[in-house]
Length: 276
Image 1 (tube, rainbow, N blue to C red):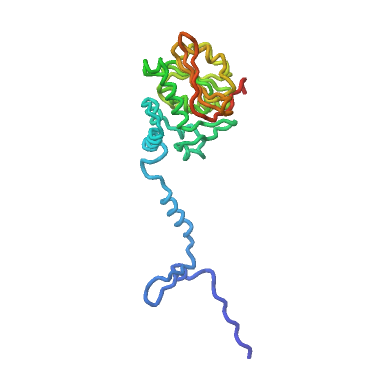
Image 2: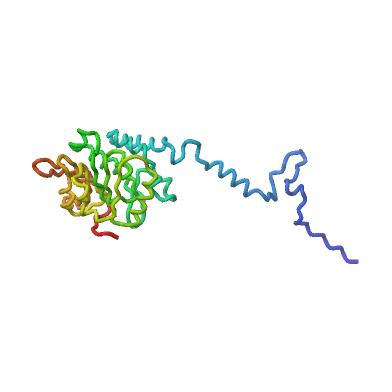
């Protein structure tokens, strides 16, 4: 008589005690939980709880910007109007959403078309230098500003809080349109966005109390110097023959002409002519 075949263990449907985990003789639960159909959902919920941003500390929190301001202050920036503007403007609104978590780090970030949004420390330094001009010191404002290189519009938003009028020129149409969209929700300030060749300045609104540029060339365009008001100040990156790199160049205009001074080394995108 042949032996009967052994019945193979049943896999499905699984018994209820299998789903719950076997019980030990002492009444405790066995750690070997063979099947938990909802385990992945359970873990996802735990992960979400671990990664959730604490209430009040999101990117739109004033505390996030306050920490950036504190770091800038510790690095040597002491111009209170500039620090107040940086504390008020949400930088993450001006960068791609994928880079938003880096918006309050002291780093430059790509904004497309071979351009970048400058490091907060460099922006703050340039604005602080601009505030050192004769007109700005006396009036407490940057007055009428010519900005070369609107980019994504972040520095433009800061300038709008520091000046009576900002005329900002961008030669790349996609960035010009992007800046217009970014600046639309911003309140306060008189800002005129111009799609044009920044090397030519913008004569219709000249003269300017402040000229500030976000791109550097071998020399400063004559149009920028010509459109400066008496007592005005220009801040721009420029090639330095001695170092072979770029430095921040500050130019003051007085009754005798233009006085040039060079400051620390920087790295900006090259200044180009024309429109694209």
